Amino acid sequence: MRLTAQECEQFERDGFILLHGFAPPERCDTILEAAKAEIEKREAPIETEGEYVDTDNLTLRRLRQVYDRRAAFRDWMTDPEIRPMLAQVLHDTPVLTLAHHNSIMTKMPSRSTETCWHQDRRYWHFENDNLVSVWLALGDETMDNGVLEFIPGSHRLDFTPEQFDAKTCFMTGLPENDALIAKKVHFDLQKGDVVLFHCRTLHHAFANQTQTSKISFVYTVKGAGNAALPGTRSSDYPEIELA
Picture (tube, helix red, strand yellow):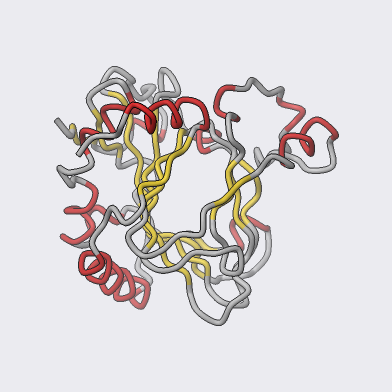
């Protein structure tokens, strides 16, 4: 499958694009059941809410390094149908980097926290910013349960360090930041929807206000010509070319 010229232009302009109904429902159900089983096991590596808000909140936020956990996860991350689209937005051969994302993302009822405005590149170390994340909704995602919001065109802007806090969150309360945040948009996602977004695109999500867990899948690809910097976490894990 390939993106249309209009879809490519949209990604270049906005820094994200929605692929509605890309993953079949049956495949989403298989991935979701595998995710629930892994969530129940809660085996490391994981991340908790407390790691982001400096509390003792041990609510699960992310299952990390899922590529090696289940065949259903590996099959999705190496799916041949999406590779031409990834090549289009990267303008290069896509390469799966297992160092970053490679995760089942959760927003649990009651105990989940808001995800601050941020760029994913904040903790990645590559020669350039030619990286794109692939977000799969395994169920409905809305403002009530913490759907992602994006700031269109933010991947094309240059920011100063003073616009971010010590945790590299894009700060609210600054006039220049608030003016940009006011332009935010979101999609209500359904099972099987996929969002591609650039590593510089500012995004965030509110806490889950419902009584049902929200579970999503995210992985990241880079252009083959974009090498991880030696001696960093980005170079500590294998990479898989998606030719």
